[in-house]
Length: 554
Image (cartoon, rainbow, N blue to C red):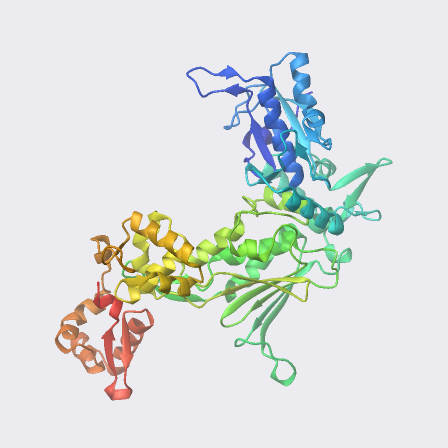
């Protein structure tokens, strides 16, 4: 048959739900056809891993770049591949396959849905699809994940009274444009396992309605997001009600994410941060962090809880995103905080559509990246809570952990790929004359003596730190030319000679040097203080400003 989705097969990005596999070995000077058992083993591994995650598609006979090279085995050899899920996987894994033509080259397309059972390969391994990899995973964790999904599968429920007329045709057009799938609306739904044909009629699942319905609230009363901006840092009610803004955001899930972004954007304030000697406007929450939290809430919430919407609360000091439903096994708060690449979806069909629409990328990577971007901006790491046993809450705080000056100093170590605790240790040392001890490190980040020893030895190996004396327990950051590159802002350069002469600055010094009035001098001194270059002592006319100690060491 002529497969009508050939363009999608060639261009679709490999990842959680999709993989290409070649029948040729190209490691030598000339490509040679791989042994059929090696190919069959790859097929079994990928399909089993996908079945443990959210299902997916495997195309055999395509190169990594999408070029079709075909499946060219004799019929008896081909049977080894076609029957691999019966022979190499226990219990037997149900899959669907069909032949397709891509640029007139014959390829084999396998499709597998999420399976309620845990499937073991004949070599004893259990695999889980994480991003574009098939990773070994403990059988107990996979069993727990399956059990959790069995208890909570809501998206697959079929709504007999709903019809295709309830769905928004424009959303199907958007999905076709994103994926290149040349399918009718009904075929698209069936491709994503969102509908079934029964007695000549298309029956829609709840997932189809949540994603595409013109009026999803007609079918699910909690399919919306409640956005509230509060004044201050706490919620008050009654006569002290402190709601500044409240918006109820309603839309099918494909539109709901973007509408929520548009609603939240105006309320994310900008803050000044010194970057390479220039004051640059940065948002108080990194865009990726809060948007990833919104996407995850929409994709993974428990839609069995109809009476509660997703809630986004913005306070002066934090953003909280509250999603109905506890975490899905084997995901735990501890694993999230350890930044493990772990993914388990309560709603695999919803996730697959949102991924193809471009909202979700490498599954299992979102939370680790949230930590990275918050850390890069010098902010506290995300916090996670389960409230009332059924509300998963993500908290992003806008309070900087480090001064802009310290962040600037830490930039010299970016290429070293240090772990977060090592960065915290260096920041501490920067503020305390460049020195630290193992005991200091243990107290600072809450690790044991063995972990502290390992991390400090790693810094020594990288020539970032050294012991003050052989066998000693006091360490220092190794001075280097790169560490001397922390330059002062232009305004402070003009004040440096006065600082050296007097040891401090006063408002009258700034007025004299820049020829400005008292209020303007106060603003300049306040800015240099808030950005970590100076600190003030004393009050009113007697107030003096000193260079911070870590700058004096530079």
